[in-house]
Length: 196
Image (tube, rainbow, N blue to C red; front, side):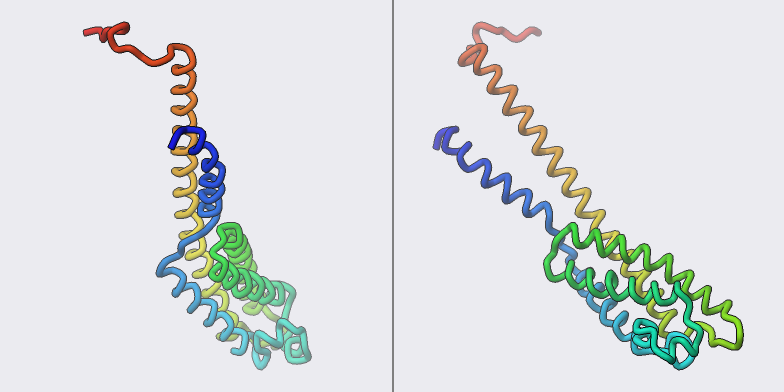
């Protein structure tokens, strides 16, 4: 196989490498994330504020209104559903690095909004109930999801950077060899004796 044959396959090899570089391999974390997603779904059927469950908060029905659910609580529930459940499951199923990044970013934002949601329930006025077990459980689970997605994404980032660095180094070496071959022709060790 000469260098022209290899060059014909180089584009295919580089495309395959880029495709693999865009994938994640969560390993045992996949099971942990799947369990956390299941528990997050369960938190939506538990009370979030008095008799209002997480589903009631999502829909904004009469129970949520009667419990005095504020905007941070509703935003947290939607972010937890979209990013904590939706994008986390999508990232696990597709193993795409970009989707895992979206799950991480959304879960991180949901964690911060979850703090506001719990705080708004603790400072509720007019006899409205405080935070329920479902809200606190959901907030803790979203924080744990953020931690696990961060570990998966950053591990993959380090591997991608190392592979990219190696690819650049090989390209420079290939270019240097082709320049030397073009200038000198075949190298003769007798013409260039090594200095002591």
